[in-house]
Length: 220
Figure 1 (cartoon, rainbow, N blue to C red):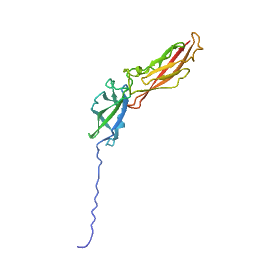
Figure 2 (figure 1 turned 45 degrees about the horizontal axis):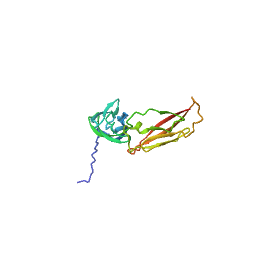
Figure 3 (figure 1 turned 120 degrees about the vertical axis):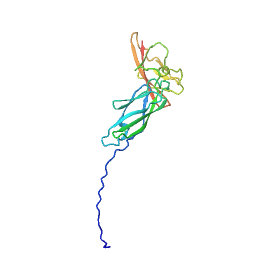
Figure 4 (figure 1 turned 60 degrees about the vertical axis):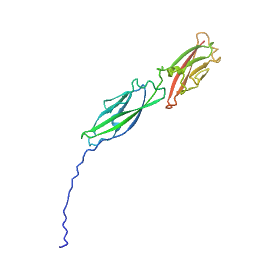
């Protein structure tokens, strides 16, 4: 009626509320002989609360091996479950993980583990052999060192350079042959000479390279 405007001030207070945690999916790798330990904090993108505190629980064990929570870490133990893997072959398993914040809100994630096979037999720090200067070529079965199988067509072998005298080659079946080639004829009775080399074993499954160190003692 009078074109007068009346202003009504309004004030709204917005209070914060906790939200559902946000977790990351992760792919972790280990070999069949090694326990994997990963900090639980590495799976957290957001806790959903101001204090950032979360409690974790495992909601699904893997189909092979076992998982536990120890001192804030997710610990995966392969055990003997992956012994059938060939050297370099991989197998993936999944673990269910749940995080719950102080407000009782929770989120789940799936942790993927890629487990790679290692040599079936223990490999010593050094493969040592002794041969006389008058003997014929020395052979070493590298295949039998890294695998229980007589032949493994998917493994490839490369002999590195000989540190010292003589000549070495390795066959496609993993047989290393060292030939003195007359290089040690000057040795007298009781004298010795050492040569060494590395044999690289490669698996096509994961491009994993395993190095077998070899040391040969030649006696006069």
